[in-house]
Image (cartoon, rainbow, N blue to C red; front, side, top):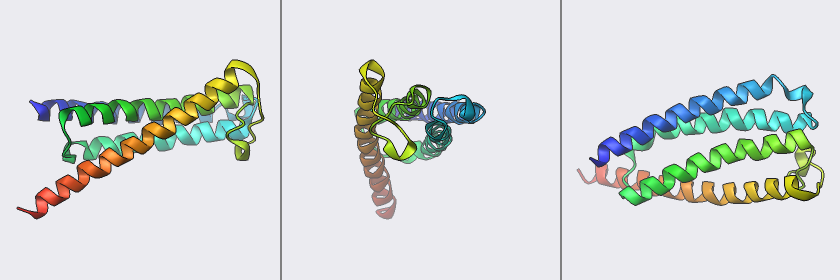
Length: 149
């Protein structure tokens, strides 16, 4: 039963990865129309890279040895983290705000947009750290189990 759930999660990760990759490509078509083109380029790259990350994760997902709850938590955190990443940078590109991303030309904004960008960036960072921890743990358990055979 658990293998079916893990297989379904793996397929969905690949699907969302392809979708995110496509969104990244589409954003690339509109880079020069955004208020901050440098940030728009970052959003384009985030879509491409996070899409590839989800596809690769989907390909190794069934090799992770994690409990059902750990798999569920990791799955939803990686979906949230990757989608939130592109959303935060896209909002920054459209508004020109993004004080937490000064290298990409984000200026300090006021109000809801700046608060939303900051919240999204902080929350996705924490999510992705947890995801990486669980994926490494699950893959390490798999390697250890295979070496004992």
